[in-house]
Amino acid sequence: MTAPVLMVLGTASSVGKSVLTTALCRIFRQDGVRVAPFKAQNMSNKADVTADGLEIGRAQSEQAAAAGLAPTVQMNPVLLKPQGDRTSQIVLDGRPAGTLHAGSFAARRELWPAVERALASLRNDYDLVVAEGAGSPAETNLREGDIVNMSVALHTDATVLLVGDIDRGGVFAHLVGTMELLAPEERALVRGFVINRFRGDPSLLTPAIDDLERRTGIPVLGVIPWLDDLRIADEDAVVLERASPAAGETGGTETDVDIAVVRLPRIANFDDFDPFVDEPSVRLRYVSRPQDLGRPQLVILPGTKATVADLEALRGAGLDEAVRRAHADGASVLGICGGFQMLGERIHDPGGVETAPGNVVEGLALLPLTTTFAAEKTTVRSSGHVEGSGGAWQAAAGAAVEGYEIHMGTTEGAARPLLTLNGHADGAISGDGRVAGTYLHGLFHNDALRHALLSGLGRGETTLRAFDREREFDRLAQHARAPRR
Image (cartoon, rainbow, N blue to C red; front, side):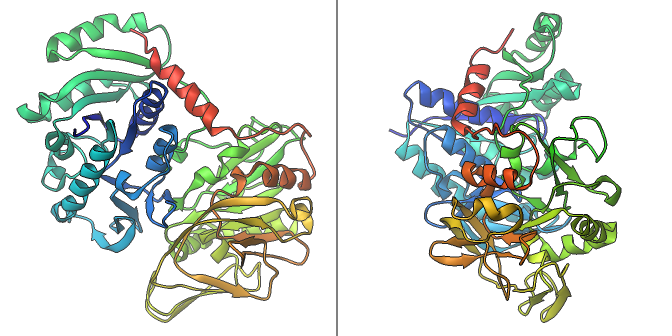
């Protein structure tokens, strides 16, 4: 029997579709349903790697975990990774498959056969598929190239939930306007509204809800209250556009370990740093300006989809010199993936992966390394242990680690390796242990390593906290099970 599809669509981007899909996956799993997540096309630089070395969106990997599954490429057959304002790398069935240029929306229809194959596979293997849409289904200018919203709903005769974010304001207009812009056969699939992120007494909404239901004939199935401090990976970097405290602002104490993550324009996989948020006496900040860097104990250059472009942006903002000053003042510096590549002396691009063929770009020269870009992408699950010692890493030597790698290039030089992964050296660490880099994403999700590093940074409480993703899934499911009316 072909499994039914429950589809979560939204009135706009970032209204909570991914989180609600995650909640539904955990709820159905708790109720004994064999459920799988699905998103036909994801646009994000946050990716994960499956056990067979294929690349999918990070949100679908998180939803799979909530469903008790290992992620597979069928859960996200098309991933678009923005490289700039007008181009995206196409990852098709887990492998790079060219570039999509802005305005080529109709070309996305050529990717539809992969969507059909993935959907058929999941519907054959599971009892239920919870499918997530992208942005809004009412963007009439994008209808011709749609492979992720109503195309999926119509193809599967899905039961559609339409989600709106009341915290943004205008949720009732968004819901009514979305319905008005849908075709009659599309409106017929919408079986209920969900009002998300409400703060206050939901009974105050009763008149507006009654009016909405009278206008549309669609019931409001629930009002989901705001949920603070949920530690589940966000789909993309939109969440980081909310203000982040600068150095010296309220929210920390002098005894905190202050960790500053440089907010690169094309930042990728920033959920690498989520485990720090719940640690006692740890202050995690994202900074975009030199004056906000302050005097942290640790500066992190995160992953990025475009190392060279973001390195140029770093220099243009004056953050390169700010990082050097922080290091000279005693801060430790860590680069992950693209951030690791930036720490070296130079970057070679013989095949024109990111720049003109044969171009050489000067790095930050904080480590004696050279990176050479390669056309073939490395996507692999990795495990091993910490090799490098010295500085804040001294206490972490020997700690077991696991995670995943997604990068296009190799980095070599005279520095000692930071890690051993899958039997091979990875990363680098300076002689004094104060500058380090690695290609491993998920590094800080390893509790023993994270706790040892925090101790090595020399400040904060000795009480440390494990990062429990299963607990967060259960908390989310409990929160979503009883939406208020």
